[in-house]
Image (cartoon, rainbow, N blue to C red; front, side):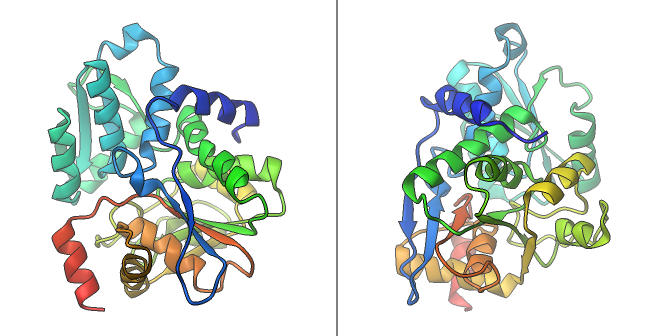
Length: 312
């Protein structure tokens, strides 16, 4: 079910004391028209704090007292751990064994417990919304209306800061960010073109849209760790098909080039998922006009970042 305007506005009130209103800045590119929504400036370096904080606002205190549980490769993990520390409750994170150390270490610094498991077991945790031996309130990283409503607050900010925007390009992980933002844009600015951005090593949405049904694809781990999986949840596919104008796939080289370009021109450090949105937005495939790329996060190991940009 798409997020309503009232849900997004309520979420904005709910998260006001936790998440920042992030800046929308022009990308200092040679050709004008590209804008960057800097969610990497959130307290945890990612937009995920919006959804996590909104879920918690809707959860009864007695449930919160049991602690929090999520499945995440790193950014929702940090959002949940950050909020749990504020509340003085435990947080357990089920992470894939491919999760980057820079993200899992950040969770542990916030007091969260990280359990690394094989990719298939990690994905299964999303499906069953629990983990054996952990009695806690599960926060889904994307397939939750309160998470999506928290993400939808980004759309409210975009339209206030750039009411005449023409297109938005959003990293596709599980779909909660894309569909949350798109729900509000379709209500308030239906003329805006909305695209997901995916990486070539794991692009299930593009394959599913082409097939007309959820489709499993090959998954290859890469430095783009914040997005990409083998499949799309059926209900998220239904939302994406209704709300989005398509998915734009970029190469690993495209993403690395975008990371270097934005660091040079705007002095902004992006992680791989964000770089996919910038690469897709600047490719011309999102059309003409004022185009916003959602810089969803900046949580990348600095040594890895340096290696990537040094080879471009």
